[in-house]
Picture 1 (tube, rainbow, N blue to C red):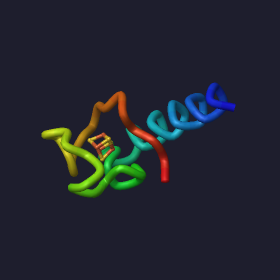
Picture 2: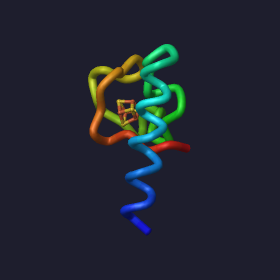
Picture 3: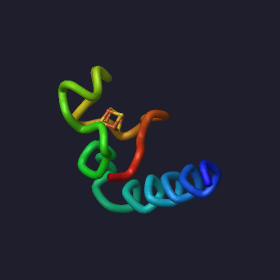
Picture 4: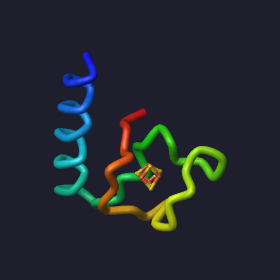
Amino acid sequence: MDFLRRLKDAFLKFIIKLDNGFLCDTCKYNHPSDCIQPDRPNAKECVEYKHK
Ligand code: SF4
């Protein structure tokens, strides 16, 4: 099921790029204690993205 999860996240990343492009808005890690990426909360590219 990990493959399906990654496929879903890749599809959602594509849809978000067509919209405003900010991945963090819908990412389950969008919290200071869960994500130390410097681009948060305005990341437009991120390999750690997981949909909520
Ligand atoms: S993991 Fe990436 S997309 Fe998710 S909150 Fe952190 S920077 Fe944003």
